[in-house]
Image (tube, rainbow, N blue to C red; front, side, top):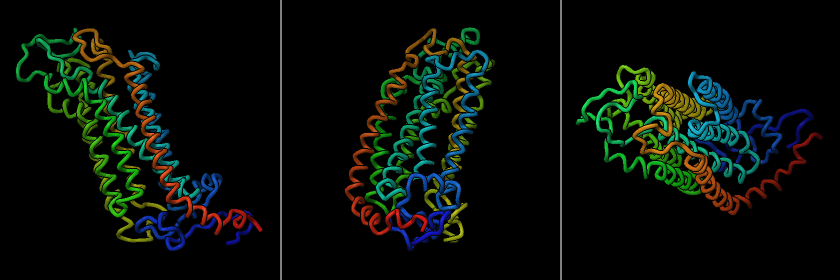
Length: 384
């Protein structure tokens, strides 16, 4: 195909691209899988079936950062590089990598069939990293003293503490202590790795039910990482009912329920492929299910951030709960090893998984990529 000077590369129909590139019920707007890096970057500014997918996760990066930095300006907050904020920064890294990897995967996946596979392997890896970043934030902020058996009273600040005999309604559940202190973070990491392996595998087998499998695979890390929140919702508050900390944390439940709601809606869009299933070809460029999926997942992340911020504020208002706590300390405070170290080890493992699947993808799709390059060489697409 020859193009006139100044024209963009052509967009194709689903019948003109390799089967690997086709999306269910999306009929037009395809970029040919032989774009250069420059072509891919420029395609962000033209209507293709990936343009909305890019912007619905790229713009949220800045929205998330805006709400995130608000914490450091709060009265009584330590400096941004304080160990107290190590878990929060790891959460930020997880979300930032998730949104950037997702947007870049949709923007750059037309460079070749192999690059397309690698892009989405990285996307799945960052989703798993995000779940562990969330787990670290939950571990240190949502329930910083889980399982501590007290002789009495609420676990608020000394000024808020009310001396009451411990009883059946005590906040601590000793049986949960063992899991939370010893297995919560390792389990979150293990499940994250299993999710990467499973999702990457759906690109090479189980193709027919890939969206269903990917959606339910990521239900497990949600359940594991949310354990501290479930614990909080099923027990009494760690703060005195009359304390400012208790008032600050009252919104935790509503933010979590909204977080769950948006995740549920995003799963419905991802599995059902509505609205394009109802009118194939009508939502090829704007409004198809993956764009709504992106919007709903970001709204869930935003509510999660608000929930974590509410708990951070509550802790800052209770000096004895600052990590490490001044009294009754059984949970250690955050350290570089227990936050950044955990994420680094996880990322190293995930990268190893991605490299293995990428090598395998190159073995599968490399010959087809080379064949396409010969049939549609770059110089044929230049101006003549």
